[in-house]
Image (cartoon, rainbow, N blue to C red; front, side):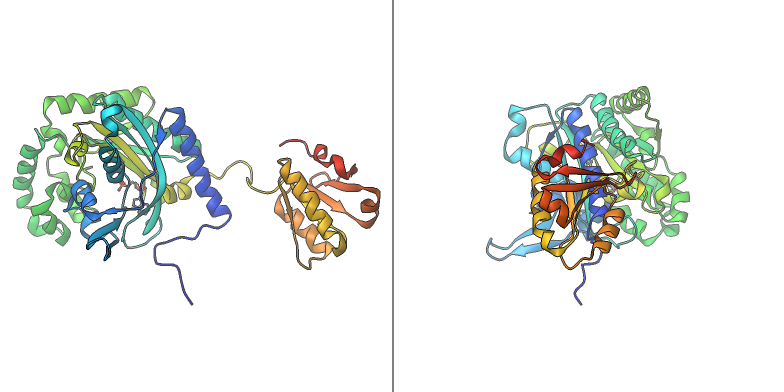
Length: 415
Ligand code: HAM
């Protein structure tokens, strides 16, 4: 039997509804903060991710789904492992920032990483995210945090925010050298991954998840200790503005993130109840990326949240949600087509109606109506049909009334 690829999900019914709830909540919040939507391709030239996410990152080294195109002269493409690179590519390619030097964008969609699948970690997952272009102000960093935590609160996701600064091109090189020096003596005791990263991306030693390596990282200086004054002032302001919004953003000196484009602010938002894959979202500032990809110097900051993890963490909605309001029942099969037409008439008036088609007894129709969560059953029998009437039963109170068939929509109060 053919099976879905490992690390992918089929979303049916309730599961799709949960994803939609996250998407709709996010959309409402993004728009209330004045962000505009952007949709970018699901695949891009692989070099885009190499130049932005970085060649020495796990994502680019081992997690991209790449494929070639014979017709197009051997170009290599990659399914997007994240959105930020594609968003920046699009703005640069279309010279958008020359006309709109301050721009706030949001997006929703699938992303792909060839990771080892486990709970909360998929190969096709979905992100919601936002990016702010054109402002170096720490208020922009804080705004992205406010946007994301507002979405989390509306979904009932308990969360904690960890914050750090990884400096800028003027202070990071000196920090990197110091880290290399101090970590050199630890290498023999560190895991193979750290040994491998030491030469190519030494900052990532700090966030190795291996227990022994974590303990060793505690003894190393964090980037915060060697920030230049403007970077220090910036991160202090982000934290202060966040606190004023009621967001407790605790400094985590080991937080460095797995993507290379960041400058200054980085943050991660976790939901501790989720277990091993507890990051529901993350983000930060990337002041050099637009220019790196050929655009005008443009400061930028943004975040992305993982929809699958948000679904695992969110509180169920107060009401069952998507049950039809009315369940339409025919007493005998000859009346099925008439009920079908009544149902469609009601649907055109905005009333949601469910019904069964094939070979269902009256009993099974009633059972289905009761299970469906519908508030009303609409019942058509021979006698009512002859009189141009329909029986309407309130499924909670069991109260029944007869209504003229052509005035039926007034039988159902708006919910
Ligand atoms: P990221 O930390 O790589 O950042 O991903 C953001 C979120 O996507 C994670 O916190 C997690 O919730 C979700 N996620 C990532 N990988 C998986 C996976 N394999 N399965 C399920 N969920 C996953 C970025 O992607 C950056 N582009 C964020 C950003 C936007 N920074 C600035 N702007």
